[in-house]
Image 1: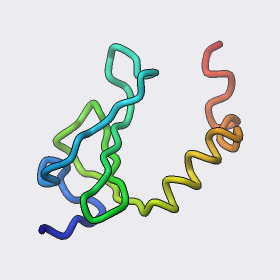
Image 2 (image 1 turned 120 degrees about the vertical axis):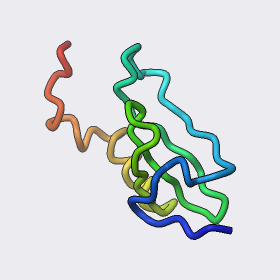
Image 3 (image 1 turned 180 degrees about the vertical axis):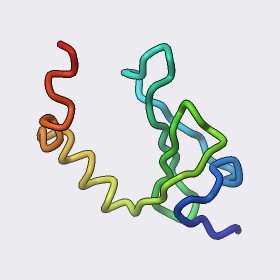
Length: 82
């Protein structure tokens, strides 16, 4: 099994399913996440699916999602145009 490191071209990560948020807009401005066979997750830009992927542990993704749910990053996006 190939070692998957940060910055690896996402097309070299085989045997994964990339998932995009249902909130993604029609222009594809979103990120995609894939669970890695050896554990952890890879994240890529949906506009450039052949580009690099960032790799995170389960704990790192869990902390990020928890922070997003708690509103920790709301100030970064303002009101989101609402």
